[in-house]
Amino acid sequence: MIEIQNAVKTFDGFAALDGITLTVPTGAVYGLVGPNGAGKSTLLRCLNGVYRTDEGTVNIQGEPVWENPALKARIGSIPDDWHYFLQSSTQDMMKLYRGIYPTFSMDRYKKLGDAFPIDPRKAIRHLSKGMQKQAAFWLTMSCMPDYLLLDEPVDGLDPVMRRQVWSLVLDDVAERGTTVLVSSHNLRELEDVCDHVGILDHGKVLLERSLEQLQDNMVKLQVVFPEEVTEVPTGIPALHASRLGRIHTLILRMNATEAEALLAQYNPVLVDAVPLTLEEIFIYELGGANYAVKDIVL
View 1 (cartoon, rainbow, N blue to C red):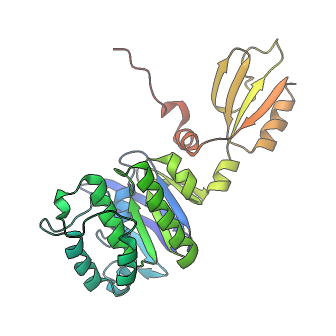
View 2 (view 1 turned 90 degrees about the horizontal axis):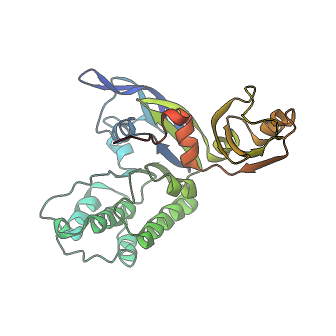
């Protein structure tokens, strides 16, 4: 289990992390989402032991990560900007990883070579961005980590390779109980792979729940009111309301049963619940229309 309690990290007076408390259950795939500058990458660097928090604790399985080589040996990490020795090939980096990680599996390294069509002898700096990301996954997953920390992990990969990578990651979760913390702006993709989600904003955790609980706590309804009702009644606390003809689309912070009971008093002609995407939940948890795309007159 990953446990972060009241973590604070500042840079020149700016609080990149401002009292974050977050828990990632063992064996979960946890999606970390938030706008640019929310603190996601800083949090991952603290979990990697690259940064030391100014306040609070960052623990994995009850042990602090900072200056804990034995614990770090169980953590695999792929940052958004992967670092490697400039003249090295994938094969050279494999030798480095094998020397650092006691759990590195040569058998797995050889098998994963079939999944990643890369010449291991070619200098990594001569590979495309997507192929460099493939090399990072090839090496990191050969380390057999118990904890996998991913920052924009599939950025630059083509659709087929994205599916290949997520298949390998989820196989490790299912078969080895690997705990995965992934930060990404691709919310549609996270919706397919994550079972827990945490939303960050300005260095704070706005909420964290299982994806099922998150989707159950907000509802999107299409409603047709009687003809005499032309506007959404003031008694309906809509986070967002739009209208097309007589059809009103409402987003409410409650479950579908509660929403339908609330609307019943207005005798609607039609009430239809529509599934909410993680992207819609993200936008309206961050302030609804205030965070939505703005029309700019040029």
